Image (cartoon, rainbow, N blue to C red; front, side):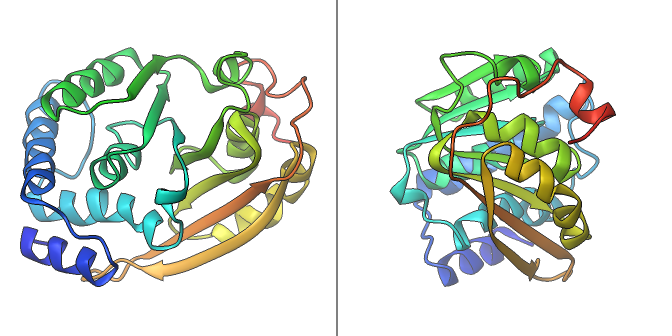
Length: 237
């Protein structure tokens, strides 16, 4: 996906980027490739691949969710900043919190945020299990996202404790989303969530499958969740 295709496809979905926003994406790409030589941030480094499989893929959440209606978003296990940073570029009003367990990735994201002149972006080097117990963050977010971090049954325990009541947890998946959803139904209910919607679509050009799983937070998560670090992954609910 070249830059013109990127811009055109977003405009078709109602997202018009200013010259400044397009420059931010260009800077993001250059910074990502530069730092990727020093640390493993992504296996995709060609410009067209990054614009399609990272930038456009991240923003695809906005085709099915109105980011103009929320203020506070948390991205769990953001890696190189996906989906939160591309979404932040498109919707500058958002107050974004990013939590990741790898310190060097947080160093990259802090540097990236400075280069992009982003405001209201907060970075926390922490395990999601610990972060979800923090009273300053627990049930404080309108939207919590996770993209290709773990199976949904695990993600639910890491993310739902951070979602405020009547907020949304969004899991971004490639294939096998329906199977993961079936396995995670019990966990979602225990954690105060309710399955709301599954949006399936294909990325343009390469036509690979993508799935967005929306979970509504209908009641407060029991205080015992999330369990101690490592437990959700070893023993999913």
